Length: 324
Image 1 (cartoon, rainbow, N blue to C red):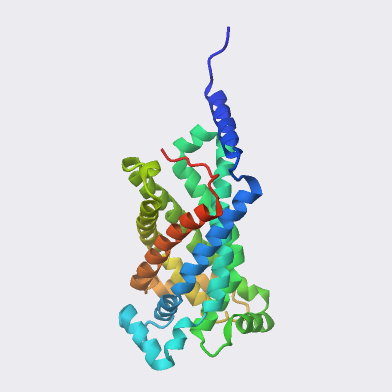
Image 2: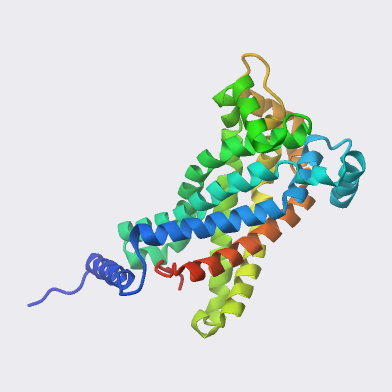
């Protein structure tokens, strides 16, 4: 007499079905698939962050010198142009583009990879049932590796923005920091960048997934045109960007502060972070939140829209969806 199907057996069958589907003729899998996810992520992040460099310059100036830049984002734009010329708004565009190209590859490619590993580990049904946890864990793991790549270039960008005469562009700034301060200077902000980026990315992906899932539950994705799917990605990304900006703003301010100048002799990173935190307070840690809400909301909306469209263009359609 055949024994009844167990939950474990069911999840194994589901996993086999998913793997078989992923290996269907004409559908990419393995390195060919994840390299396309990574390229799509690299493109969407570098293009959006690069395009918003002027906003990031003003946001960073407000965080680092609130006494001077005290008239909001529009006033900050005017003051930078008045004092330094319009070209100053593109300060740090090189490290921004390069850093977020690498970070985007690890973030989006890693998210898809770790999501699939969670499905392999838990089984499709369990992963779908507990998908919020899968989204959170996958995005956190992906962001950790992404930040290892991003941190040196972000440190260079902040130094160039905070000290406009420091060096002439990415290569000059990177080389000068390395010669004068050593490799440790590039990772002085690694703690704050993790503290900022991991909650940011967790909020970004889980809110995006939940908003998109809610929309597609009402208006099935299979019935939508490509242009309407792009609109959904834009809207879901905008909401996700607002949530991510609010969650990560205190760490973003601390990151700007710690990368502005060198620490005192013998002063460790944690000591500096504690000191900066005490100086800022809760209110101070949200300095520049208006500019950052605009920036992060806009770039996150366009990131998900571009990511979705580039994935389609590259034929990267083999990922597994676990939303219900």
